[in-house]
Image (tube, rainbow, N blue to C red):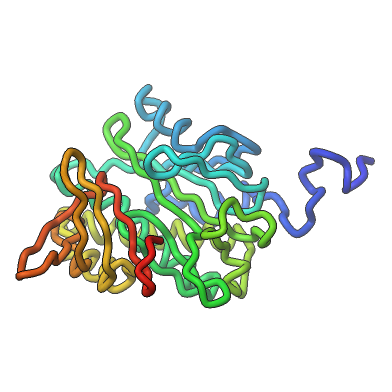
Length: 289
């Protein structure tokens, strides 16, 4: 019998057991559910890259979920890397086909995923999770705002691949940056990844169904209001770096109907910025965060 502390043994860290693929499929894949297929792989470079490749090849259906125990080349916004120890977090991508929803409304899908992840994690982990526009998940660690997760969406095939990474059980000495956090460090009542994954996917199914039923109208579906209610960026001073233009500084005052962040720049002027623009928050002391 292989010793439990042997290198590369999937049970070597008993605080981080592997996901049970069979149990997850039994709990999430139903005839009337959004989720149609779910797979768990031991390790991959990026679940988004893998699922997007399958979508472009036409070999994947809507509602497919790909989960990795470890990502070796995970990607964040602006091609930043995302790394974490094996089985220390949630690393997954889903494939969605909004179909007849006007394509100009598809930009709400990653914001929708943020609302779904924040509400699902808050319920299952008991951690207050906020949204930093457009795609970060924030938690409080020792009174400090820390990034514990992120969302990355990309068009592929006839739909969109949405990736989610969440630090679940990372300890302080495992954090990739001083500004990072994890659910465990934020005082989560549960770090059981199967419980958290089911909660996130069920929340995503709910919000996606509600949004589609409203023909992708973020206001009518309640999505716009829900995002604004959970957005930590609002009422903060931000600096937006706009391509080919002078950086813009203003107070974030709203999320508009297209999912853009609206800045008040003084004298009653309002300027929307898109998810493609680089946005930095200014903390209470005036420093960029």
